Length: 279
Image 1 (cartoon, rainbow, N blue to C red):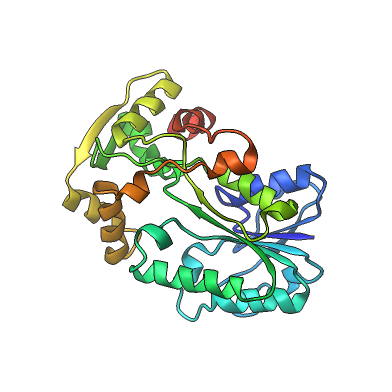
Image 2: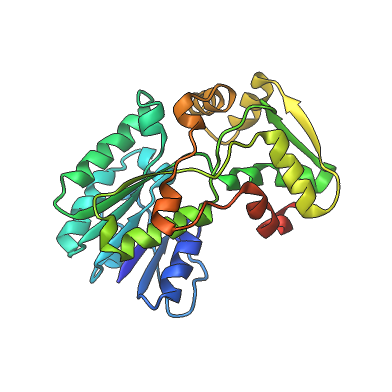
């Protein structure tokens, strides 16, 4: 049995589908009830609550651990999840970390994630660590304005980073869960090229077959919008990366190619597959 946390999200959903398609028994974990592929067991759990995963981990041999905001929730103890997994008989954990633990290690969220990486390394379990950069699916933030006004509003229109398709993260995760060659692997995951918000807008317009205008926000305007859904500190941190990426954040990593034997998908491919969100 393989347990997938965050199973209804941009990474967990294709990962669950890939594992089920490979004939592996899967337990899909999400905070709320959700539809899952035929043959997949679903368990509702809140990772911020100690012991919430106990029933899901029973009989499991591998775990994909995606914490998202749960890592920072009051009372959360993600290290306990790794301990509980070991006690339950899980042998392998694939952890979704972040490229920021390398590129901007002093931020509070990255310090916590690096500590969790270290906990996993010292757990005695088989492990692999995935460190993606920015996600192509972050473009879904623009979906409402594209549908309503045919416009993308974003800061730093001509500053890019090599964002990655979440489906590629899922494919790498599946390989790490299923293939012993990836035990002890630490993979930095990026897309195939640096792409700017203006270029992303052009790709969305091409997928739609209709014009989409790009409107450049000031940093203050972008922060005001972002703080409606995230802490101000995290908004500033994100804007620092988007506005002034470091050389390490601009680097196109070879790791997707190394693991999957193919290049990562470009943003235009993601836009075409997800065009319905923008119609």
